[in-house]
Image 1 (cartoon, rainbow, N blue to C red):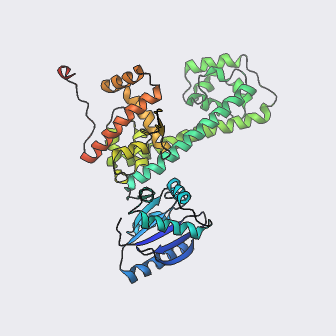
Image 2: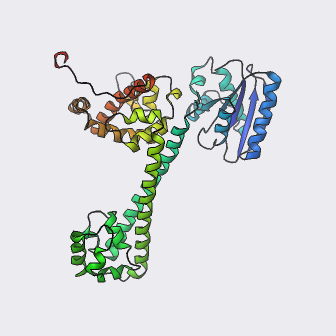
Image 3: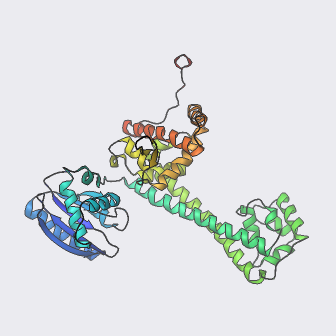
Length: 402
């Protein structure tokens, strides 16, 4: 951080933000509130530019809620060429506990962030509470938005499928038994080929074979069900809900496929995603999720910081004769979930990784613990690949050196 810079602290709110502007010596130059609107953002930059011209010093901005309530102001700050720092809320709270204020208001909180700026050069706690935000490549930012949206669609589809199965068991006993999974495409096409469930029991063979995905095998299953089809009295009103859910599942499936195509196209232009995707077992969705959540390695000083961010490393939690570890709170749960899935698949693809996984299991580690241990090594691999501009290579181990 440049010690000779104008410090701007932003206490972020849902509808209004408190701004405090100070000099390196701690003198407060200005304090004001801005609305979370285009007009409020224009006022923010107008007042900061006046101060910048007056003092001829660079601007450094620290704000809470980066990539959350702070959007889109945080992106505009970066585009203006200002240095942006994200305030770690947990460490800010710890700082407030150590150096308590007489009260808690937005104005006081903004001034406390200015104090963090000033003390960051001398106090490790203050330095750790401020993290500079590095510009993220547009492709990776898009991947983050798209993969998060995709996961929401997948979760919604799973909820609707569970609801559909429950209603089918209650209204049409035996109908669900003709398929192993209610989300089978041919089964959903069968459910939605008529406007009422009882009509399905009267479909003829020619009509069944005309349904997309239904061949002779599935048609025979449906005809076997038709001979003993039964419907509960509530089918009159619940049946319509079942058809709505079936159509919704089909629509969500199409949306997910379209999202996958967009993600694949953008991931092909992302250097980070392509590097991660070169690792065996890291599929198109996993590599896009991981690349999107990481954004850029410039955010991290060391690969150990990246490992903690991705949930592949733990913190020492030893005290006296007790030894142990605990997970850090600063984990990106989306990146961790994608990494766990990808590493589990990676084990099946690379013999050396399988041997390491088996070794950890033999030591008494559980499956997830062994996967995280291997994931810790793969974080180092990802770090080295990206820094050196290389792709993943499987090297054969010389038996003489083992």
